[in-house]
Every structure is written in structure tokens, then in C-alpha cells.
Image (tube, rainbow, N blue to C red; front, top):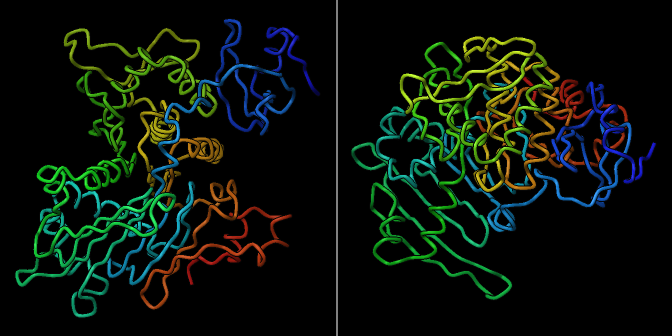
Length: 440
């Protein structure tokens, strides 16, 4: 059923409310001053489908669809990761896509892949010695310990740059750089890469030193890129979690990795990015229909503080975060992360089991959020959720299995699964143990 553009928006509004089942994903748009929701647009971007029941021809740019990041994300995609000797990963050479979903049994090594990014972040922030000590020593980070493995090797290829490091155990049990190297290669202009060694024998990275003392543009680019790869954990929803406390109202430059500054960040979006803020609110309502809006304002007794508070539909009362279920609070954090303005997104989002505590319906909405956000950033997820895996395509999935103590990462082959995919989702096939990645 098609609705030509000359139909009045007021006519279409009757199709939008209430939300029928079977929608794909909501966005809020404003047309002629009237706000309405739509769920998706065609590949030609000439038609908006209103929750699968009608279409509206349009000639305006979606708020969320506008790419404020431009081509920056495409130029900085992490293309290839090589890891050896790190925890359960003996030897890994993995090419990455815009969306990467790691599945596998408990203890298969999914989380160790995510931890490799955390390890890299500690290196870039010159915090390697402290991180190793806090982890229980170098021996705990090596594949089967120092008796089996003498080196940890990393290679991260992103954009036109590569960062490589080889780490060995020193005599006093610390990790020391046996090699550190950066390189640049733009194949459009250069036939071979430019390599630069940062030396060996040091306990902390020389990247910052190269950037500051030598005005090294490659080192500067590598540092900025890797620092923008963020691991998010929204699991702490206890009574003492910072997300539930009064926090500094000016702590709003970016959404923190534990969402502890959710209130000031949402307050900033409400004041400066109202369309993005409204998209967040509208999406939360789909999963929490009792939710009306946030009640965000500075603390009346201390204007430098703010607390996460919200209003329920049909009530004048307001509630704080303690009145929200753990799953709802985590969902709010995820929605805020994924629907924030594109230029505020990190270059890589890493999430370890984001489905924790979510209703199956919320997981479906989360999957659609993830599909949309990869237009602006790269996503890497580890999951145990059959429902979540059901929402994705074959090329998105990476199966992780433990074989003889070693984590094996492999992508799925379409030829082997083509006959099954007509009748089953990928999550269903995973549950039937046709994809691997199940306890054995």
C-alpha cells in the first residue's frame, strides 16, 4: 500500500500510533513541523516505510541518517588483527568487517579477544606495567604460561596504518618490548609500505615519545585511532553503581564505558542535540512502554551535580534509576551509546554480552540498532544469545571454539549452510549445533 507524498502527514499519523508488531526500527523525523516515526527507508532512499504498512515519498534528510562523520569511519576501519601467544589465543589472523558477532561456548575465548583490545589500550596509555601486575603477572597473559610461550605478538592493521608489537618476559617477570613498529601504506600512491621501528628493550610504548619528540605523524595517528576503540560494560547496575548516583553535570564530553555519566550526557544531548535525544527517548518507549521521558535538571541544592531521573506515563511523579529494572537500565545505556550523534561515536564499539538482562523483544531492537550504527562506526560483539544471532547475516558471524586448549576463530561458509537458511535463523542453527561454537 503506497502513499504518495501529497498525502497529509496527519493522515499518516493514524498509521503510526500505536506501534504495531513487526516494525523494523524506529527513527523520529520532523516534516512540516510534525514529528512522526518511521522504521526504515528503501535502498534508493526515496521512500520511507511506515512500520511496514505504508510508504511516504520524501526529499529531506533523516536526522539519524545524515553522516556527520563523513568518510572518517571508512578510512579508519580495523581491517585485520593478528594475535599470538595471548591467553587462550595461540595464533590468530582475522579479517574484520563493519559488524562482527563472536559466538561460542563459555570459555571458548570470545572474551579473550575483547581483552586483547583492553591490553592494547593499556599499552597505548603507557599503563602496561601496572596492567600486567594487576593481572597477576606476565605468566597469566601468555598462552599456557611462560613454559609454553615466550612471546606475545600483536599486529593491528587499520586505515593506511599498522601497529605491531612483540613482548617478552624480562628477568624480573615483567613484559618488555622485544620489538615495536609502526607503518604507513597507501597503495594508491605508494608501491610499498613505510616502516619505522620504535626500538626494543623498553617497558612502556615509545609511541608518545615519537609523537612528541619527533613530531611523528604516523605515531600521532596510531595513538588517536587506537584510543578511540572503546570497550563498553553496562553490567554494574547495583545500588552503588555510579550510574545511579549524583554526578558532575559537566562530565559530558563523551559517554563513559560504564555509562556512569549517563545523566549528564543525556542532559547535554537534550540541550544541544534535541533530535538525537528524542530518538533515544522514542526507542526506549518501544521496550519500556511505561516510560515517558527523562527528568534531567541540575540538583536543586548543588547545581554542579545531576542524577538520572525519569517520569512515568500518566503520572506526575518522577523516579530515579533505582526504580528501573537492571535490564531496562542497561537497555537505556545501550540506546544512548548507539543513537548518539555520529561524530561522538568511537571508531570501534566493543561489547561483551550486551544482551545481559534484556527481554527478547529488547534484543531484537538492539540488533537493529547495531545494524544502523555500522554506517558510522565499526562494531565487535561477543554474545551467548540465540535471539541476537538470529537477527544477523552469515558474513557477520565469527565462531569461536576451544580445541586442545586453543581458541580457534573462523567465519562461516555459505555453501555449507545455504539449504538451511531458508527455514532457520542463524541462532536456531547455532542452537542445533550446526554452526559449531557449542559445548562439546
